[in-house]
Length: 228
Image (cartoon, rainbow, N blue to C red; front, side):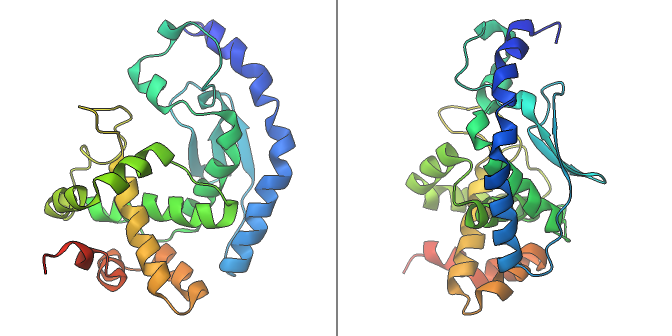
């Protein structure tokens, strides 16, 4: 707070708006129960932290870093470094972030490969959008849709490895390419799987807890990019 006094002063009135978002957040929780009967609902904590995470899950529940939602406010630009200027979001998106983290709370499987990480994050985006009615990572998705075949070709070459540095948790634009495009790939795989499924509720359970290789195969996503 000593390093960014004007930023923290600027976000205070914004963070006080969070309480009014309770009905929207609860609506997402109810929708989650409709789609996934085994869903569990932890406490949600809104915290002022040290600007290192907008959201996480922990033993106590969902932890939302309210200090990471100062986008659009007026404060000295030099108080934030390049990474923070990229990742800081608008406080109006907090209900969507809560929905994303709620999906993580339901997920039971976690692999070490790039593919597993992408599906874990991308499916949280996808199911989170189903329950909240709004999208997260909109800029990443816009770029991804315009370059999808190229991105999949690159991703497919790396997805069995454990190096996520080119696809996940980057937090800054590189050569005009937005960060964290692994989220986009994972979203599209989950979306393709869901659209193919006749039993949508069963599909949600499988997206949350299924084997990532089977999800990719059964989604048919990779088949889209094979040359005829």
